[in-house]
Amino acid sequence: MIKAIVTGHSRGLGAAIANQLLLRGIPLLAIARSPSPDLAARFPDLVQEVALDLTQPERIAHWLDGGVLPAFLRDCERALLINNAGMLQPVGRLEMQNPRRIADAVNLNVTAALMLAGAFADASTGVADRRILHVSSGAARSPYPGWSVYCAGKAALDHHARAVSLDATPGLRICSVAPGVIDTAMQADIRASSLEQFPLRDKFEAMQRSGGLAQPGPTAERLVRFMLDDAFGSAPTADLRDLPQ
Image 1 (cartoon, rainbow, N blue to C red):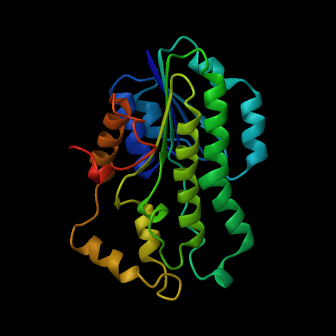
Image 2 (cartoon, one colour):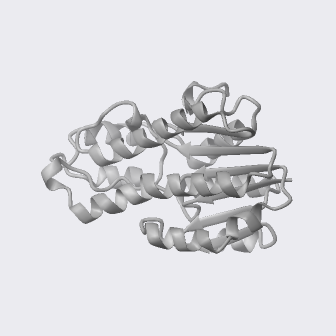
């Protein structure tokens, strides 16, 4: 049996990933600040939701101490962790960034993902096939003006995957995957930025007008298919747009 854990499942790409896993009959432990009434109604026997603010490391640690992960992963043959939750803000030059928002972004984009990855690896030691997917970004590999916090956070996930892969932990595969530019609330957030905050805003507005944004559903289907493929983890980082269709 395959079991999966997904963060940020209540909207956007995370909701689409959760949907793809559940359509395959994969039991899901879904973690987000807010629940998803749609998924709970459609898959009541497969989805277990956890309301948890992933910007708060102490709350994450307290929840992990409760032993939910090992209990959920018991008796499965393949375990999946998809660290999808993330945030773009704060956007702007360094002096425009609020310190509290910086802390929230780093906690959500990096700290929560690394905490869950470590706890997942420990809780799944008896599982033969364990896989971790960090949802990364092209911003991890190419810097953008105004996105210093976001770029740094996604780059941290990439380098985490590279280092973990060198550990060669038996049965554990990891890959940090950039999924492309997707039509989600984050893109709306980008278009709502001022040019002072994000000088490249017009580029993303043009992509939206021309239909150049990928849709969450097909992107999630490709991500899940890749994660279940034998090739997953052969390289620690990947760009979904470069993988076979």
